[in-house]
Image 1 (tube, rainbow, N blue to C red):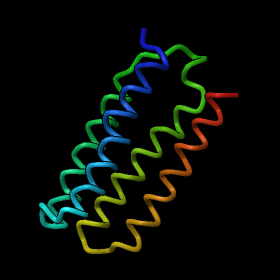
Image 2: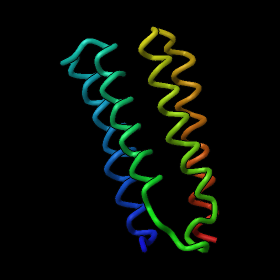
Image 3: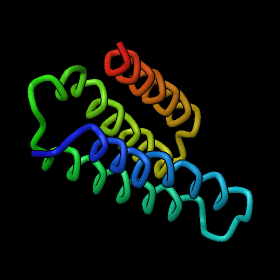
Image 4: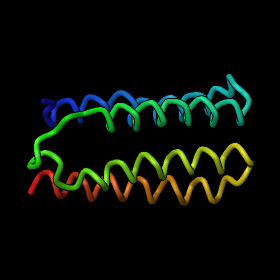
Length: 109
């Protein structure tokens, strides 16, 4: 049985670090923009797969749908970014952040 610390590890490893990596890659212009979006999409997809593998108690699953939706929204944002639809990607990224904030509210109350 997994715990909320396992959820936190997945969020840190795949959501937070990927977001930071994207910012650093954009500033350094180390990769072409579409390659950055593709790599980020792969990481968010891995994170979503890891979340789905977790076996959590009913109590720990409270609001879990918001977390999964947040990852799915970032994957959609990456897909939009790959197509050059940066405004749409930004909107979807903001929505993803709102979903994760909603999850944190559910977990901490």
